[in-house]
Amino acid sequence: MNWQGQRLRTWQFNDVFAVRWTGPQLNVDSEQMLEESLEIAHHGFKSRTP
Image 1 (spheres, rainbow, N blue to C red):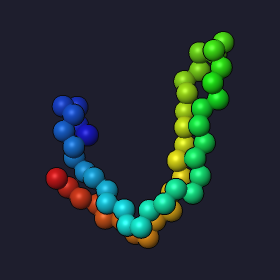
Image 2: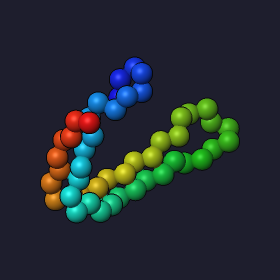
Image 3: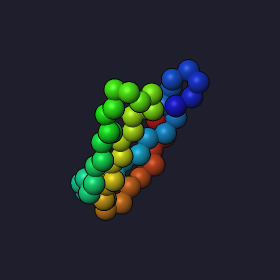
Image 4: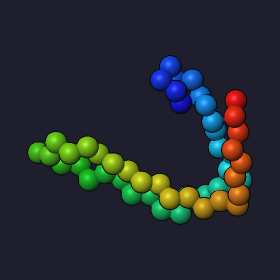
């Protein structure tokens, strides 16, 4: 996306499925940013410009 929020490029994935997901470790005493990770497997992809 550009600075105006307009989409510049998209990705089209074929035959996608999730392989691994890890979620955040919640701790009310911590000020750390919460992170999550999603690992996927696919059978090819194409780049598209709107």
